[in-house]
Image (cartoon, rainbow, N blue to C red; front, side, top):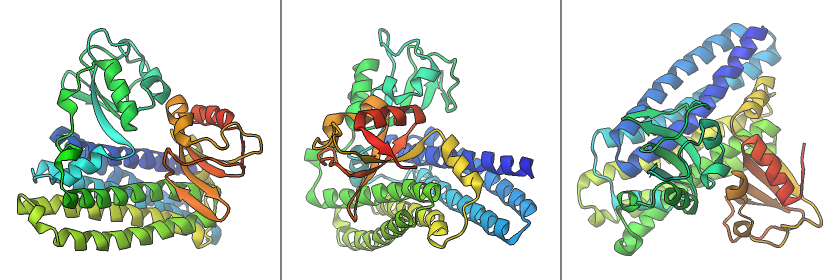
Length: 396
């Protein structure tokens, strides 16, 4: 039984990490219209299909008592949900491979996202040269960016070895706030022209801007709901699970509104085929939101969490922490953007609970207040640094 539980833990951990990686790669393939990145999304989809089959097999063989059966059924629901996320991202990547024309609103949506994908070339004289893979995995060393992959000699390296050293000519695929990506790009080369977005703000119409903003909202809500679904499971918190349900309902409404706006704006399409990627991005976001609620609903329905689920989150590269800003905290009364928490620690504030109100994905202009309950996400080492900076008390 011990071997089976360990196998389940390893499978779920790998599924969580690969599905999140597929999410980033799919949007990167759209942003750069890169077939190589799109093909990697397909490879990840195949890996996740294999892992889902393996998870089902282990769970079926592990069931014993009714209580264990309910917990293992929950594992299967999570496996199916994670698999649905990867399938949705594969559908986005397929748009690139099939060479559908990308509407300007999608390019602008990707450029204006809170977290953007960046391609950074390392040139001679860069301070990044000789940095180890171990150091590169810490966002603090990359201006607050997370490294997703490295391209060397025409080949992408995704699981970067700790002993690997960055070399001149390497291309880094990173994710982070736009300002952090630009800072990293300056450190790496200073040559930005090949990475300038295709649709600058001043060149898009109000119609395109509205479509772009709606797509951006759908993407942000879907990713936020996925993160919160893991938080709900980790804390066995019905309140957070209910909020994931609210986000899922909001996504459904936003999708309906998006289609109304889109079909009334057909004249903005330069090519009728641009309609397909627009629908694809909206549909994929809604599917991710549905998958997130599939995870969170296990908590809402009162299904006992399997102990392995807590191990999955705790041993994941990213972990979730909840803390309360205590009286006398130095950050109380300050704006989030002024603290530079993400750049200093690689940790970001996923949500704030103030009284009975939740503030999801708070803006840099949001003021922190004593008594705020924060949900943080990031690597364990960064979380501890963030707690010291914020002056908060961790909620066990």
